[in-house]
Structure formats: structure tokens, C-alpha cells
Length: 142
Image (cartoon, helix red, strand yellow):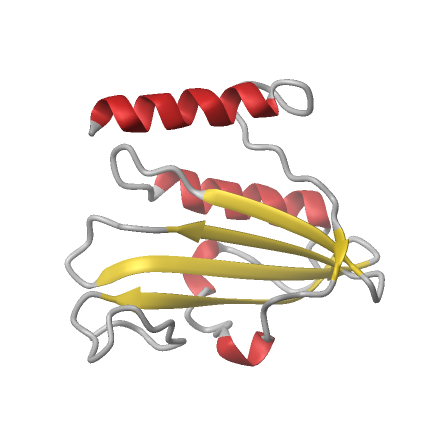
């Protein structure tokens, strides 16, 4: 298992070398529409991340990376994606899967920006003890 994780990490880092330092995961602009509806995310659930409406994009990204890095389980690699949306806004989605927590299985945070200012954000989770552990919910896990 550790070998697979090490190989995966090495591949990810090699792919990012041209656009970011080797200890960081690159965020690249992609023109598209969002795959996520903000109604499925909770700002309250994301309260512990440290984001506030009005943050500039660099500050918000630092908070997101800080949260997903400092609270990661051993060997956990968060996935960061970004998109420049057709309407001119920008979106960052951060996801962690297979958390070693007794209740939270996966978590996903979305942050949306207009003119590089945070305009909306939220989080959703998958819960080990939920009726459907594969369903994303925007409430705290039982």
C-alpha cells in the first residue's frame, strides 16, 4: 500500500514540476462550466476552514491548502482542482477521500471567486455511518 501511495505521489509531483514547486500541487485554469451546484454545499460546515467572504484568491487558497494539509491523515493526498468558468468567475474544489476518521469518510470544499475575491464557499461530506455512505451531504456526520 505504501509503495502504491509513494508511486502515485511521485507521478503527481513529476507532473507538477513545470508549473509549481515540487512540494505543491499546481492549480491550472480551465475554461468550463461548474460541475457543482452551491446549494449542495454548506458554508456552516466549512466554518472551521478559516475562509471569509471577501478574501482575495491568494489568501483563500492559502487557507484551503493549510486546512487540507494540516488536517490530512497520514499518507492522505488532497486533490485540488480549479476552473475558470464561462461566466468569468473562478472556482477551486479541494477533495480528500478515505479519511481515517470514525465518522467522516470524504470531504469536499468549493470556493468561488469573482474578480479574484471570494464570493461563495461551502463544504460537503460523505459519512461512514450514514444510511448511504457514498452520498454527499451538507450536514455534519452522525
